[in-house]
Amino acid sequence: DAKTTQPNSMESNEEEPVHLPCNHSTISGTDYIHWYRQLPSQGPEYVIHGLTSNVNNRMASLAIAEDRKSSTLILHRATLRDAAVYYCIPGAGSYQLTFGKGTKLSVIP
Amino acid sequence: NAGVTQTPKFRVLKTGQSMTLLCAQDMNHEYMYWYRQDPGMGLRLIHYSVGEGTTAKGEVPDGYNVSRLKKQNFLLGLESAAPSQTSVYFCASSYSVIRAGEQYFGPGTRLTVT
Image 1 (tube, helix red, strand yellow):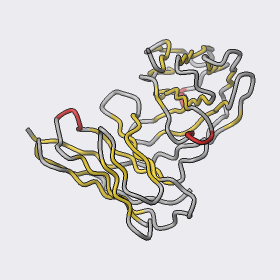
Image 2 (cartoon, helix red, strand yellow):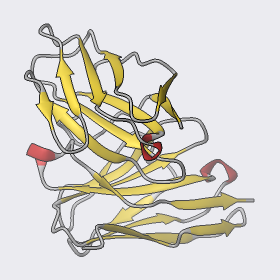
Image 3 (cartoon, one colour):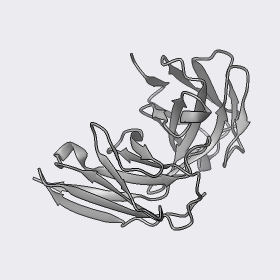
C-alpha cells in the first residue's frame, strides 16, 4: 500500500470551506484514493473516493493532482458535525483498509 | 435499513474468559470485516470474509477466530481473552471486490479485559 502523509490536526471556522491535504507519492497507477472520517466514539464513515478525476458527492469533493501523488478533500461549508478524524487511504481497492493516524479536524463555532 | 449492527456495545471480561461478538448487516453485502482500534491508533484488520462460509486472516489475527455461517452475520470469537485484547472492535461490510474500498462500519464494541 502507498504511504500517506496527512497533517496531524487542522482547524476551521464554521461555515467556511476546509481543504484537507494528503500526500501519497508512492501510489500505484491502479490504486483508488478513498477518504473516510471518524466522528468521536463512532465507527469510520465512508466519505468519497476517486481514481484520476475530481469527484463530488453530497458530503464532499475530492481533488486529485494530475500526477496522483496528492489529493485534497474539500468540505464546502464546515459544520460542527464535521469535526472528526479524516483518513486518506490510497490503494483501498482490495480487502484491507490501511488506516493511518489521519487529520483531526476541529470546527470553531 | 439498520445497516451494520454490533452486539454487545460494551463488555468487560476477565483474563482467560471467552466471548463472541456478533455483527449483522442488512445490505446484502458479500464482504465482511473485523477491525480493532487501540487508543490513538488507526484501525487494524483482524479477519475478513469474502462470502458465506469463507474466512481469511488479516493483519492481526492471533487470538481471534471468526465464522460466517450466514451471509448477513459475521462472528468474532475470543477463546481466552488477554489484557492486550482490550480495544474497540468494529465490524464492516462492502458489496464486492469492485467496491471493497467502500466499507460500511458498525458502531463498535468496547471490550475491556482485566
